[in-house]
Structures are given as structure tokens and as C-alpha cells.
Amino acid sequence: MKLRNCFREPIKEIFQAAEYLNQAVSFHENGEFLKAENLILKADIPEIREWTESLWGKNSPYLNFEKTVDSPPILKKEERIETRMPNKALKEKIIERDGYNCVFCGTPVIRAEIRKIIQQFYPKALKWERKNIDQHSAFQAMWLQYDHLLPHSRGGNNDLNNLVITCAPCNFARMQYTLSEVSLLNPLNRERTNYEWDGLERIKKIVVRNLI
Image (cartoon, rainbow, N blue to C red; front, side):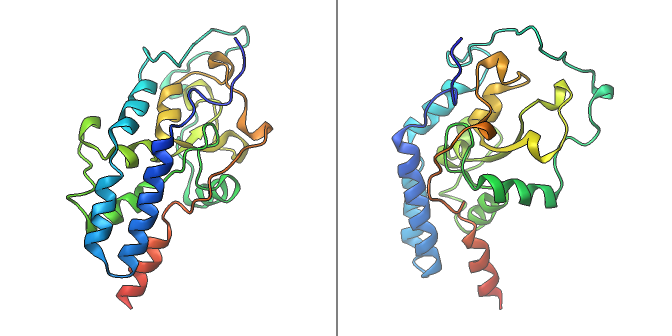
């Protein structure tokens, strides 16, 4: 199969939602809370949910799995690297290198911590329940993940060169497969176009400033 950058290119509605959310944080900073809430609601776009759901699951038409000769086996749990997720310091290094964009498809991403802060202010606009269907479509698609290039289940470690920033759809779409098994190029070995995006991280500074 032909090698590709990502499973599926992000749709324009994702970037539109990112603009809405960026504006919402700016309105929040200025104390215009109703305007901020309306924009968060506006960013919950049905087409984004359809894009996300087209990628999740083993039946996704974009997966195209093919076993390769050099594929490492799926390890038993007791055989895997003990610590699956990177620590705080390593997470910061990954973000410093990759920014707040999925290294595969370029989707702007938001850390779960930032989503939770925004949800505290706007719980009605930013829905986030247990079921996927009950989660805000933009925050779901733009959910920042620390993804292993060689999956943890296949013996992947937490070295910086094995971890990348991805969106949730790209991470969950690949599941336990290696890059070669799903015909993906290694994003660290090619040029990437990043969307100008700060991950809405500035809302943390706004909260801290208001507490002083």
C-alpha cells in the first residue's frame, strides 16, 4: 500500500471550530462570558463528530491494515514497559518539539487539563460525559494525546523519539498497529505544516491572574 501522512485529512470545520474556541477564550479574558459560551456551543459542529467517528474502530474504511514481515508481536501485559505514559517533564519536551498540532493530520489539539478548566466555567456549553456521543465534538476531535510511534503493546518505550503529539482520532484509529502495518509515514522524518495554535493554554494564565 502507498505510504501516507495520515488516515484522513482534517475537514475545514475543525479549523473553524478552533477559531471559535480561540475567540471564546479571548471573550472570556475580557469578561464577555455569554459571548464565550455561545462560541463554545457554536464549535460543537456535527460534521466534526462524523469525521471523528469515521476514523474510530476496526471497521473504519480509512484503517487499511496489512501485516508486515517485520511486525513485532503483541506482548503480554507483564512483558510490556511498566510505565505506559510519559511523566510531566517528558510531556513538556514532546509539546515543545511538536507544538499543539497532531503530527499526523495537523489537527489543532487541546490538553485535557485545559478542557476541564473551560468546562468549569461553561459546563452547559462544553458537554463531556462518558459516552462519545455525549461529548463536545470539537473538544473530542482536538483532544491531545501522547502517542507511541511503536505502540506500548508492541514493546514501545517512553523515549522522546518514540512519542508524539496526536489528536484523539489519529491515536485511537491506529489502536495497537505499527506505522508500517497501516501504511503511515513516520511524522518525525518528514516536514509538517502546523496550524498557528496555542492549545488555548493561555486560559491558565487568565485563571491565575484572576486569583491574584
